[in-house]
Length: 374
Image 1 (tube, rainbow, N blue to C red):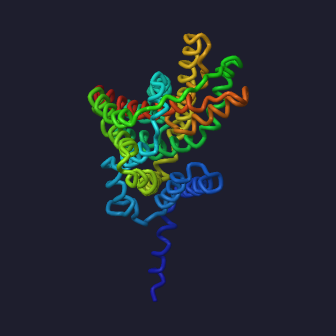
Image 2 (cartoon, helix red, strand yellow):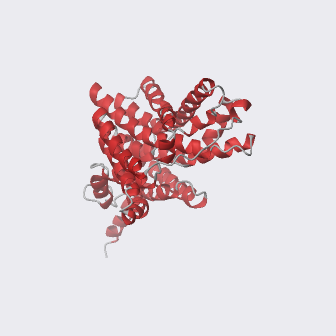
Image 3 (tube, rainbow, N blue to C red):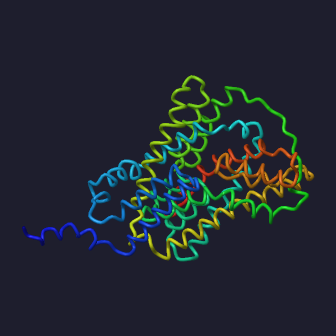
């Protein structure tokens, strides 16, 4: 028996580089955080496993024809996976609090400040316009939007941008409170805002996703796939005749699509291309984008506090991001630290729903602007 033939079994070890070992370790850390710390487990676990697979030499999983490459081509290159996730998010989202108090839409717009601020920072650091826009979209605090935009503008940065977006989304309860504490006074934190339920008719709830889709698609056609997917999911939720499909979108569609999305994102995290100074810069700017988003919402909230004769609680502005409904609950808990009987949740839910909608529109606007410039 020719023992030299057995050496073929060691080819994988010979092709293993230190960067691959580091990424396998990072994949393990992501899996640990998903399981032990419950940090976005639906996505971080498959991302971690995908990262491990991507760094095992000679498996062929990420090569043309490999199963992960097929998933990438079918779901990311065609943009289907992010759009399916948006259908699921739309089916989960109740825009009622926003419809009850439409002025909260302004806070949703202010909550996107980090996108454009980070875009400018990335440009100043030498990133190309497409790369800077993809990094800036982390400020949408919306994983599917970040994936959709970066896959179109800078697919080579998809891995770090997606991991950054979802990692920081899970850290919103840690990132936002210090910003709220620094930027608001005790008097502002303790403003009470009475809440009166304003019933929203079924016809309004049904018309809302249709009207939003038409208006946004006419103003920013590049945003149409994003907004149409989100609003279609919401229409399924609100129409009242497709309850089974609504449940399917919220659970089965969301779960399976997120599973495949995570594996594919992890598969882009090859050690040789991932372990760079550029990756650390993306994570740093992503954190900055989150802080700027929160600050932008708080600044508009402080302006509304002044214009309302000190009757508006600026903390509501911090909820104007797309981390729905997590950010609204954070605002409620934070406000109760200073006035236990203060009930801000429903106001914050309106701001949070606006942030969810605004983040999708912002992604389309970024695509439209970049397409116009290029």
